[in-house]
Image 1 (tube, one colour):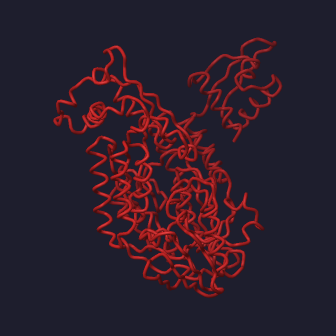
Image 2 (cartoon, rainbow, N blue to C red; image 1 turned 90 degrees about the vertical axis):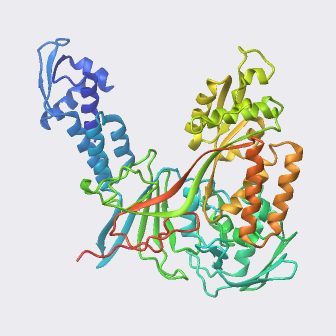
Image 3 (cartoon, helix red, strand yellow; image 1 turned 60 degrees about the vertical axis):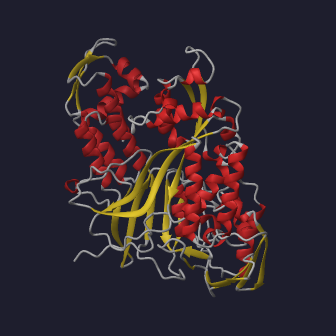
Length: 571
């Protein structure tokens, strides 16, 4: 493969010319090697019949170099070799580097698609079904305590279980590791009855002590984590016997039971410390249908756990690979073996794919931090800013405030743009930069500050004027909304903060999910009306898949539930 790259480097250096005059010293400089190695490389290319080399006698004299094959052919060979070695990242880098035309891009991408999807092999007279999936988020940890990314949560949901799980209907809680539960009249004491003989991946039996350890670990953590507003309200957790756990809350919270079905509340073994907590996130042990067999910077391999208490998954192996760029949907004529695509491109041939919506949406939004002493404490300026963001989709709704000049509103001259800092995370940098560009023509000078998800939980939000983030609207939406509005209440004026906190208090006491949804809508309307919140856009999460895929269902986060996926045998 190195020889392929060296050929492409030479071909690119000479601008695609078929025939050039060169010296070995020049070639050595281009290839970054010695005169002797350059001669060796040229000889190997001649043997491959990629080039014709006609040397001239005498050092320093120019020789004739003739390219006999197209760079596209060598790029394709290079990528195919990378795929055969399962070196997907080299294949992707080859596409980035060498696909100088859309036709070559399509060709190379078509070959890449053959690596993904469903593959079958025979081992010891057994058929092994493997599904290879690409994801565009890098995986760092599967430890429920430290996860930040949805992709990590997707994998974690197949490795761990919680005490309960959510069904497809809003508010319907189903048994998980607990087959039953009850609560007292105050709804602060919850008792959970565990299934018997549930096995962890390392062979130990789940007991109430594992549940106690899992929740105490949450309660004692100093990590800034999602849903901490719930588990920090746990007063005590105790094992009444080997299969019974009692959790006491400081105050009633109707979101507590839904929280137990999230990946954050997954149950880990109490001997986690013996397994090495630092490495637990990369080689976790759970009770789920799949166990982590391998994890590296770019690859995660899941193997079926045959003793799963809710029945063995149909797949034997799942290989999840980090692909750091968006893969377009493959049309049927490419011969693609890629069967399941998350958030696929609409360019896929609709007649060749089945499409299913998971009823999950991604909402991208921007919020104003009025807690910071700065220009956005002025409501008229916030109104102008939101109008600038809205004008591309609703240009006819300008009001008198919309038409005012932001510099005038801020009390400064026309030559003094309003300086704003926009905070976001790497995934949303493009949105933040688009906002900055849109505001630049309206008297705002924006600086985009991009930090890691972990840093984003810190003081950067209160140090910035605008915050760009997203809300994943799935079956855990109400939990996410509570967390979001609790955070936003720290960014707004005292009066608005008091009202939001009052609504959140009522929501935490409301047993009816529909009534809670109405209260969440009141908070949203208030924030939008006061120009604290602006929704940039909202897009559905959907999955395209070939008709040969069976058992396509979704978990609570809108991801394909791998435990039910299967492929009919070819007969």
